[in-house]
Image 1 (cartoon, helix red, strand yellow):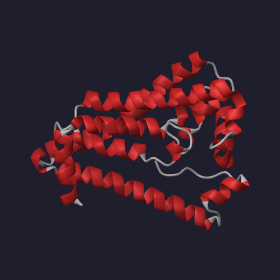
Image 2 (spheres, rainbow, N blue to C red):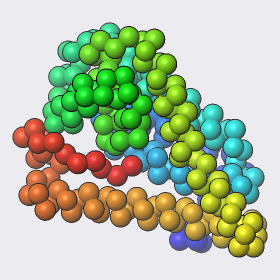
Image 3 (cartoon, one colour):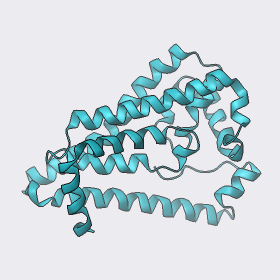
Image 4 (cartoon, rainbow, N blue to C red):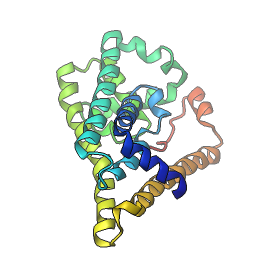
Length: 227
């Protein structure tokens, strides 16, 4: 795995704009209804944050790409719901996931305005709450005032841990940046955690005797999937 990561790190160092574009797309697609439940945007962002301490990527560029992508994705989903109202909640492709849509609507009705903030950190309804908020009549001013704060907090929570962890490994453990050991440890740890979360999620579905598609068809409330 480390032999695979070294060329990737070298490539990112030579073409940082591609990494910023990847971060932007990961944050954007993760906010799109249905698509966001399938794209591992948070995993990608957490992993690439490890490249900031060594200078392959700039902190401001990583933060900007993630914030702009997430804000644009959330905002587009909200406006789609705001213009179509409740009709969009039963339209394709949302109609294929009635259980998740019902969970998103229940979440929004329970928490109101705060649902926009909390949903940023709760997969998979992260990708469904903005469109639900728009469809249920939340005003644009109220949505954006909360969403901007939510996106900023989400970006910091996904980027700074990797920056601090890798910096600490190199500073306190004496690991040289040019050998990429700290980056390897963080990136491998992020992907291992994502795989474990996916495995736990799958086992829970099998233990309940339902696959995700079965639960969607029968309207059962699913548990949170991996980020």
